[in-house]
Structure formats: structure tokens, C-alpha cells
Length: 238
Image 1 (cartoon, rainbow, N blue to C red):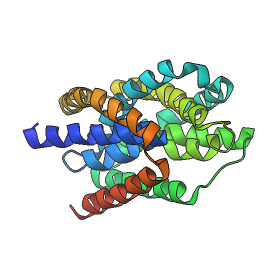
Image 2: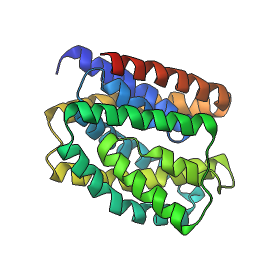
Image 3: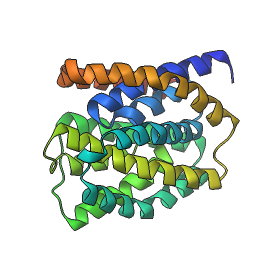
Image 4: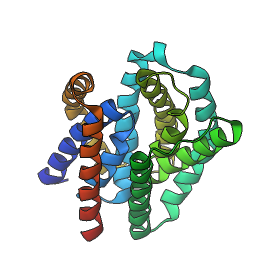
């Protein structure tokens, strides 16, 4: 990999970590489109899965007392049905088709964020959110929207909401990564990007935690949405 690709990856991880810590779900939405500026969609998805698993492990351990454990376990179990489906899609979709699938996933995610769509709690919606989230993780890297739409309607606080999301993302991330590795999707490019991204992660955590405490989350959310729209425009036009 060239130095420019690595530099883009490091900066992308820094921004993605900040987004994740402030909004609870922005990591993949920010990271996948930015990584696609320098590498293929498949490598961007696998790199995001690896780094996301590391970040959400940190969040889960730190905030474990705030997790809605029953909800997290239910969604994680349902996602087991979706993870293999996403791996199949990643295996058989062409590079161009995968690129547009990722773009579509980000657009849907943006619409959910901007409109504040929520799913009522229930068995059917839990199954729908879990399976679709698992499929999205291993095919596009962007597994947050279905979970966000379900979890934010039932959590008692922002901290519980963020912690429960992180716990589900953590379990999905490691399971999905194992499946992707088994399918031969982990390679020198994804490992190089992940290694560089791990160097940027601590700084992103420090900045993100400070912003979470002191910055207006709504304004930051708007900034992230604008940034994502610009990233999507660049990805579509390149």
C-alpha cells in the first residue's frame, strides 16, 4: 500500500472513532466511505469490521454496567442468521455492485438518522433488526441502522443506549470477522490498514470522550451527516 492510502485510513479511523463515541453508531458509516476513497469496497468492509470489533470491545468493557443485557443478547443471537448471508454477498457480488450496495446502505443509514425512525420493541422487530444488521455487517460493514431504529425507542438513557449498541456491535464484530477470515477476505491490505488505524484509535477515543461531555451532540450529528454526504458524493464520482 502507498503512504497516501495509509494516511487516508488513519484520518478516517480518527474521525470514525469520534463519531462512534458521540452518536453511538457512526463508526462504520464514516469509515467505510472514507476507506473506499483509496481501497476497494471489500477491503473497506473487512477493515471496518476488524477495527470496529476492537473499538466496541473497549466500549463494552468500560460501560458494561449500563448494558441492557437481555436486549443485547437477543439481537446478537438473531444476527447469527444474518452474518453468513452477508459473507455470501461479499463473495459473489462484483466490485461495482458491492460499491453501490455500500452507497445504498449509507444513504439508508442517513435517512434513519435524519428522520429519527424507530421500531417498536417486539419479537418480530427484534428478529428483523438482528438478522438485517448481521447481513449488513459482513456485506457492507454498516450494521448500525436497524439496531439504532430498535434500541433507541426503549432505552432509559443515552448512556444505556450507547452501551447496549456497543455490546451488540462487539459480539457481531468478532463473529463476523471470524467468518470473513474463514472466507479468505482478510489480506495484506486489510491488515495494513487495520494496523495503521489502531495507531489513530487512542487519540480518537480521547477526543471523542471529551466532545461527548462538552459538545452539543445535535450539532455534531449534523456535522457528521454533512461529512457523510460529501464522502458519498466523492465515492460515487470517483
